[in-house]
Length: 84
Image (cartoon, rainbow, N blue to C red):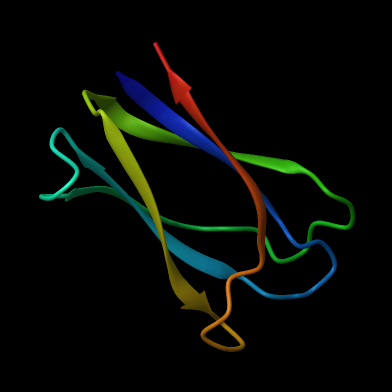
C-alpha cells in the first residue's frame, strides 16, 4: 500500500517539474492517483516528499513526467515510493 513518494529532482535549475503517479495491479491498466509539482528553487540534491490523500494498493507504480515551466523535460535523479 503506497502512501506517498519522495523525488530528487535536478537542483538549481529553476525548473518546476510537473508529474503524475499511476498505479496498477496487473501492469496493463494504470490509474492516476496523484499529480504534483516539484520545487524549482532547491539548491542541492534534496528529497521532496509528496503525500497521497489516502493509501493505494499497487503491484506496479509508474512515474509520468509532465514537463515543467521551462520545457517538456523533468530532470529526475531518483524516486522512492513510500509504503505503509
